[in-house]
Amino acid sequence: MKAAREAAGDRKDRPKLLAVTVLTSFDQATLREIGMSDPIESRAVALACLAKRAGMDGAVCSAHEARAIRRACGPKFIILIPGVRPSKGAANDQSRIATPAEAVRAGANYLVVGRPITAAPNPRSAVSAIVDEMKSALQ
Image (cartoon, rainbow, N blue to C red):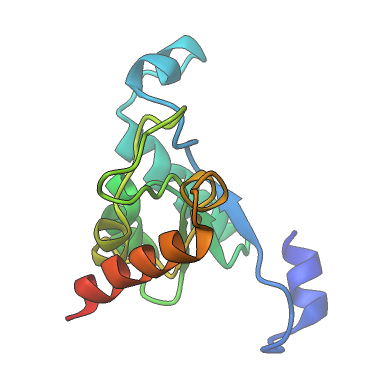
């Protein structure tokens, strides 16, 4: 990965490479089931730091770990937060979710919002409500 990044140089138009830390569908019990006993936050931070040292541009993490990752990896490290649900949205298979406003306040550069839009009776209205929630966090 680092070689690919170096080959692309510091061009602003090159693809950004992000590493996944701990899936938002995982909870502490799931982490233990796969042999990891440390708390989710410390595991996610360790993985993000490893990704940064390997030359990645950022990480995918839940809003619950985003602030700690930002402190550890710095302001230029990209943070993408999946598992974003509107305040009245269903969690579905996600264990560690956040509202759009919570994700923005946690320091997300990008949000992943899927089912709350694709499963909405009116996707355009769902997007508008999500954008309004994001804007509220920036005021």
